[in-house]
Image 1 (cartoon, rainbow, N blue to C red):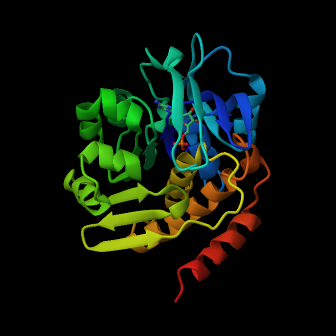
Image 2 (cartoon, rainbow, N blue to C red):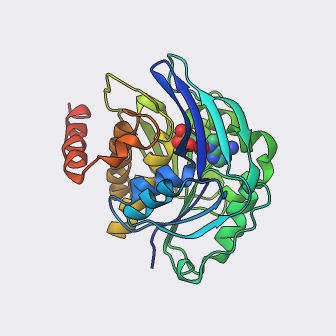
Length: 299
Ligand code: AMP
């Protein structure tokens, strides 16, 4: 039985950064997050896909032990075109083609219904709600989103978020959703939706974790060469849910560790285009960089 289960997009991405570009590269929120989760556990994806999704992309995901039973192929694949300038913390969207996402009506496979850890990655919040309803007795649900959905489905998104145990947003999106420049206020408002944890991602500057009685700030890894940050947020989240599922421990202390694993895998992901760097990543490299994080926060 796959656990965690991860809902999100499978994308064919055209991405340009100051260091190069790729076309129709493998991407999407469920892809990056399930690859990151697969270092710790055996995730299953729920996602719309198209008939034009290259077979070698699917084969790669399967080779990571990821279940694709919840992937429904119909028509043309979701496509995203974006670019980054020298400030690589902000992705600029040129075009989003929803294609098979537009009429995706998720029916999750029987074997996914008993999953305990669920990640509702970035996708239409109405789909996030529909999927969550089908999971019988989840122990921990984490949810993410982005400006695209905040702009067009704010109320549905707030409804979906209020059903989760943890909300994850990047700093720009948190400010936008809660209409405040203060990340501390945004974190509080995330908690006010009834969740246990609020996580705010700050790109290369790390992340913040809020709970009712604690505050944690994880540093960013001092990377010299960020080549393509696409998927950093998703791989950060995927590592968190994969690690929590592996350890079955949702305490605040373990959440801090999960976040540092998230930052570790996200930093490796940003060192290459698309999912390329995740292909050669090993647990040994992850553990080594995880230990380096300890020194970054020690004084
Ligand atoms: P991030 O981790 O935030 O960099 O996510 C990057 C991925 O999000 C890309 O691979 C895109 O395919 C995917 N994406 C872009 N726009 C959307 C959207 N509106 N909904 C869901 N996924 C998206």
